[in-house]
Amino acid sequence: MTDVVVICGHPRPGSRTLQLARAVGERLAGPGKRCTVALVDIAELGPALLVPGDDRTGHALADVQEATLLIVATPTCQGSYSGALKAFLDQLPANALAGVVAVPVVTATFQSQADATEAFLARLLRELGADVVDFGLTAIETEMADLPGVADQYAAAFSA
Image (tube, rainbow, N blue to C red; front, side, top):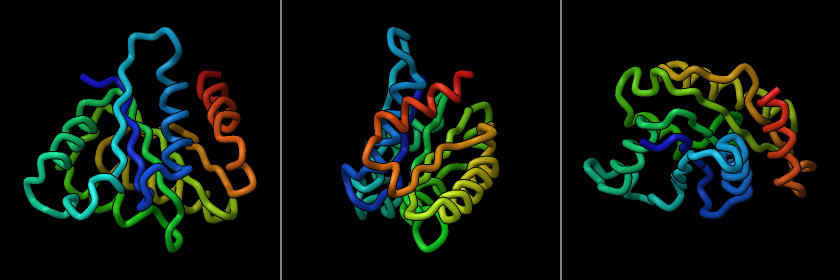
């Protein structure tokens, strides 16, 4: 069983959204704890994401369903979460995330965009049965220069 799973729905591999989500996952897993952290970078799945029975996608979906804590990150795209993230999550069965604590992580240019996307993402995760935290992490362009600092600040607030 994987304790913490980080999903990034950014269409570009290695994005700042991915870096932020990974940092949040590592901090919430905690130093010295015996938690494993798995990473699902949807950009790396590429077009195979849409191929029924793709092994890599299947393994990623299994990791997500086995998580205790799920960090779900996306950039704001056209006023919502990314289509690649939606295509991935749509492959989960009903209530697949029951009992999983989910943390939305959203990057955007402006705070109003981030807030709207975070609300849409939280709704989607609840629809899949997840227990979504009361406040996700939103990071706007002006905050993205210090990703470790943003992750530290969120983890401190999360633990409080």
